[in-house]
Length: 94
Image (cartoon, rainbow, N blue to C red; front, side, top):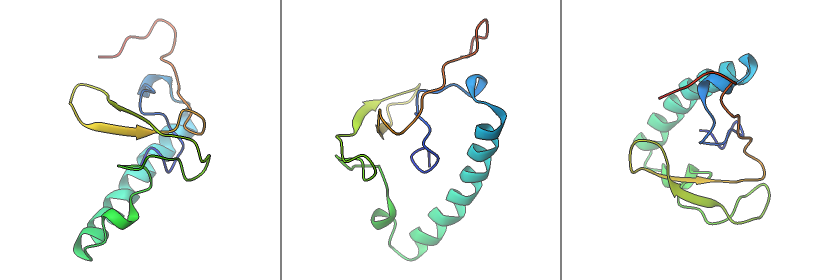
């Protein structure tokens, strides 16, 4: 979902501008419906844009991979086309 809206997975919610935050919420909802439809049709893997891929389909460069956040879930992201929003000055997030 983050790849769809060109949002870096290490971006912080507090650092997102309002339009990008709205886009994130809208895309989370849409992706949930898409995910369920793909799962029911047994075509989930076919629709992955970034997960388990080695190359960014937009930039044609290697994806960065890592286990980000508090859980050990793998992340695949493009350092070039997914923008990272830093936290706002003076705001800490946990």
